[in-house]
Length: 594
Image (cartoon, rainbow, N blue to C red; front, side, top):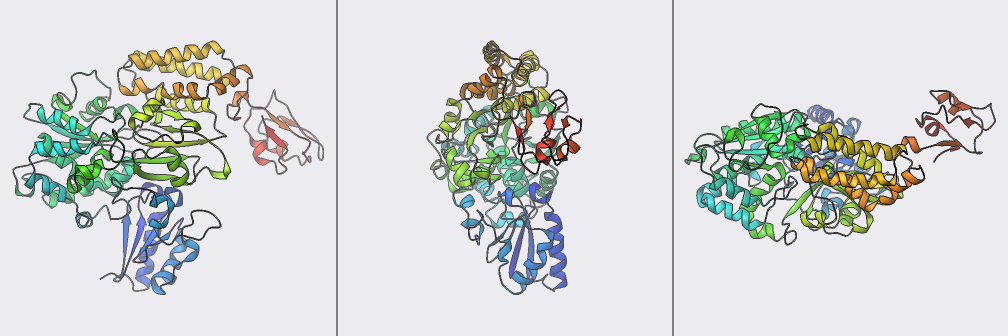
């Protein structure tokens, strides 16, 4: 019987910050102090508060230790586990100068969330099926197989109002119905875990922290639509997620929860893993299926839709990780419970990966309809350094930038589309006053150009031409007429690209043109970048605060700075490569960037 449980985050973020070494040191010190029989170490998935990792939580006190280092293990063992005293210096503080919080649930970050898809992440050991079962795991599957017909399961999903969390927001129950109605001897159930949006890591964290929730949901979906084989398509860059999925699959088969005659019924279904090579286009459903088949991932025209002719030419159901992560809760708690959260047309919760210029980088799950202001300021902790909020990018390269005037918009599928953005898979990148919106549009378009599969001309050539126009703006060589040409080209690409990824590629450009056109015009008219980001439009000057210490002169890699000791130095702009080394190294703040 264990007296204490020490939960250590084993998500990718904390693992990259030495959480494995923390676990190893804990194990060693527990052995050295003969505590191995009374204290259990539990490796969990992501807790969500990535900015404060590695995270260690000690129960039964629920002590929340953040930014833990290997050297801190001794204090945790000696003070907390042996003497029963909290290690005050390691307790998490939401803001400097405030008293520490004593448990995870005491934080503003967690208190304002409603965790459905993330319910088990940071709570259980994802590599132990018994822990998942202890939290009602596989009860939903048992309920479906013993109490509901396949059509009744689909009706429950329809009634819940769940929409696909992969980006487009298509009604999940309707998609299941289409596949159920299709006539075929073989049907496939697939999980899209490709997650290629920059800044998005929701699906990865669910697979790392609660893989059985996805397996159980896929089995339920297979029962509902008549599926015979499942595939999880996950990118190879997610090694922890892949390994935990493999472990979960082996455990589920051993327990008779996957394979032939599941739980003694006539229902048989199994799941295999297929690794993606990191192509953004393979997040598009038809390209994903082509890749699973072993071919180069390229989208194909629709119709026929995958519900009728998908993987290997057979009816195929495809949902993303987060969509599946909601299914078991809908079955066990009821459609009305799920539909009670969210808005009229967007039910339930949504997971967002908060990143960029924000205090609390990490994963948050909130009811649909929560305002952007609540997410950024109440949960995210606001903008570091007292900077002003400038925009938030949702939907990755397919989304748009939301300006300050829409901070109080309720976030759901339809509202975001109304203002020129989209939900996407859930990446939410926050930008402050130091961000150049032209540069942001260029960043996302560069990504799209690099990731275009090249199959259709509007995407392959159109996005390239659009990027060239953006280059002209950031270089100071564009004209105002170029802005009209850009806008016209954006709509051409949207109307003619083959797949959804190509059709939405112009969104970052269109939204920044709509809300931040003045920044484009400043680049063109005044040859200036207001945020001092675009290199070709930036100049460096040395003010009379210069003490003549010669440090900038010595640091300049191209010899562009002249001046004698104890005299004001001068930058030769013809030689200057605008690397910023002089600005970074000046101790007297005598160098300005304009």
